[in-house]
Structure formats: structure tokens, C-alpha cells
Amino acid sequence: MKVRVILIGIALCAVTGVAGAKLPPLPPADPVKAEEAKQKAAETAKKETELLAKYQDKAVANYQRNKGMPSAGQKTSEKK
Image (tube, rainbow, N blue to C red):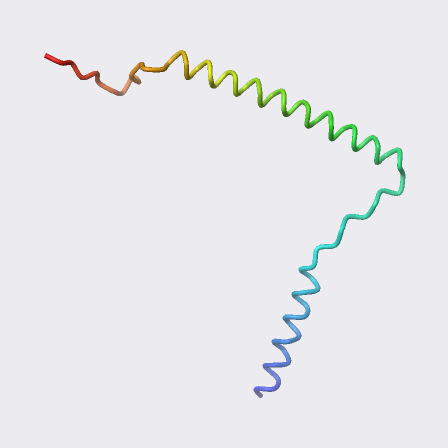
């Protein structure tokens, strides 16, 4: 009985190791498609960078505009 459990455990470990191994992606068969995909990825990265910069600038402007102002839910403390 114990031998059977040990063999099943070893088999499961071996199967998990083989199934969990990450294989490298296959190279594209068509170099033209690969170049198009590379260009598309570059364009997407450029657009994402521009959007990130735009929204970072927007966040900075919002922070500077509202800096030092209490929010609507806060009460200002008055010194007497």
C-alpha cells in the first residue's frame, strides 16, 4: 500500500513538472508578419506612453489646483 502511494506521488510530481515547464514561443513562420507585429507593438507602446504622460500631467495640475484646500467633508479649524 505504501509503495503504491509513493509511486503515485512520484508520478504526480513528474507530470506536474513536465506540465509546468514553460516552453519558448514559436518563431513566426512569416518574417513579414513578424515585422508587422513588431511595428504594431511599438506603436501601441508609444500611444500608451503618450497617454500616461497626459494623465500624469492632468493629475499634477489637479494636485496643484487643489493643494492646501480642504475637501468638502472636512471642517476648517478656526483659531480664536
